[in-house]
Length: 144
Image (cartoon, rainbow, N blue to C red):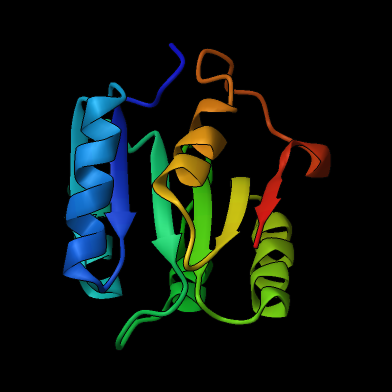
């Protein structure tokens, strides 16, 4: 499989959610769930059976922000992969990447907003979805 079938997009921009949902469905995703804040995302993750293959996370969220989300992700036994997005300066994405690695999250890329849909799709397609082995730092995509 060269594309994840179950994706959760967490972003507070409704237009961005719609555009990403359509792009992911067009490229082969079976289920695309959307959350506009961290609270909604946590609820969707608890309810998700099986777990999501991929979570696209904007770090700038109202209330329960992306950094808090990263802190609450449970990775034990999970093959969920992550792509982080942010309009914040690059060093904030770098900090989030380091934090993700310390937490043992399976991060496949970090992209700075604004980014193209093509760059995000390429980051996702660049991962071998048939193999769920942990990626090392060399497997990360950086853009922005």
